[in-house]
Length: 319
Image 1 (cartoon, rainbow, N blue to C red):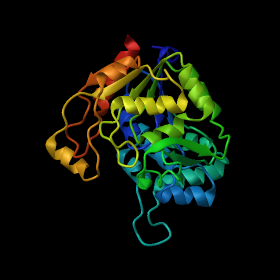
Image 2: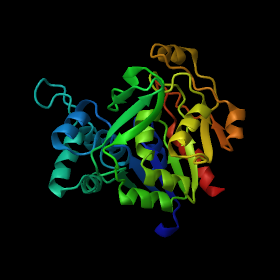
Image 3: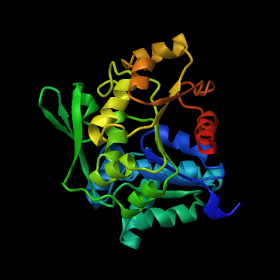
């Protein structure tokens, strides 16, 4: 099969859900592109971001590790986090390497490209922007909370999120990837702090809305305190549409099996509950519903099964 003939699949997002999805997709016969959030401001990522004035490297690092075909030990080294009490404490080696490569190449996106080459990454990885950006949330009560890591801690109902400084320019390659995509997948992850910063720039929102390919949202399995408490599946979709425009999403992937009691109890301690799939509302919104048992039973916490979810998404391309 010619490289040109491979279907273009673009995955958008960040957080813990995106690498899981990418691990499943990377070995399929597709042309894969990951568009990754750079709005994180916590931990090692936040310190590097502030001290070096570069976009946040943390989510990018996890995506590189997920798509790398390097030796496992090399990936482990890349993901290593220093815990000794010195100037390196809390830093991840991968974040430091991304910062160093940005310094060498003079450009964050070029830095990612070079590290991807060194670690034999399958597919293309683009930061959603080359700019250092901040995320803010306007709450239902009118207060504004600034900083990706602070937003869930406010524990208020979120009305909308926005980026600064305005206007934040997306990476042209990111827009081009969306325009060419045969399938756009919005990855599972923190709705307001991982997914939204990747899709709310006007040019990105426009590209998703006008996409020639199908736009699929892989819905979270559990709610998240401070972000989506009490949200149903349709509430997740509605929040995305409120930010980027109605009828932006064509289909939703949902897990349709009950969650084990023991796992529910663990999540209950974090005030997280299973997301309810309000089927009729999703149908009324014009969405195709793709159901399946898509959780990995071998994991102690709820994680999508990368192979199950990848084959579900791949089946959409063959239709």
